[in-house]
Image (cartoon, rainbow, N blue to C red; front, side):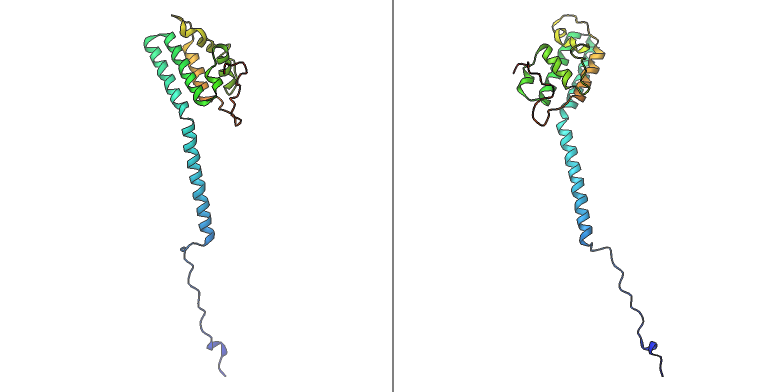
Length: 174
């Protein structure tokens, strides 16, 4: 009698599975990763565009300080800082009430919109912005005012979702 196992054919291994084409799960994972990358890029670009005014204001403040160091004209420096802060505030808070603020209301608004909510504008070095630009030789700590203005430009609170500027004062001229 012959051996029945001898009549069997040898084991045939299947061909090795290739990397390509990808299964549908891998395509789905790649699509999700691609969407996440594109969303991240979009968010980054939007954030940069939304905060471009801050970068421009910070550069203008630095130029104003350089001009002050060249000419030692404190009144001109105070005028430049006041204009830069006003433009920056109008870019961040387009509400009509912000444009009409004057005097102490304006300084209170600057204090209220600063992240740490200090009183440096109403009671500190920022008070020089009230009368200093109109005096021939104002006394002001230019370096401290520059630091305060830079801090406000970089760290002020933006408009709230309700569309109202945080700290927008009721008594402001509308």
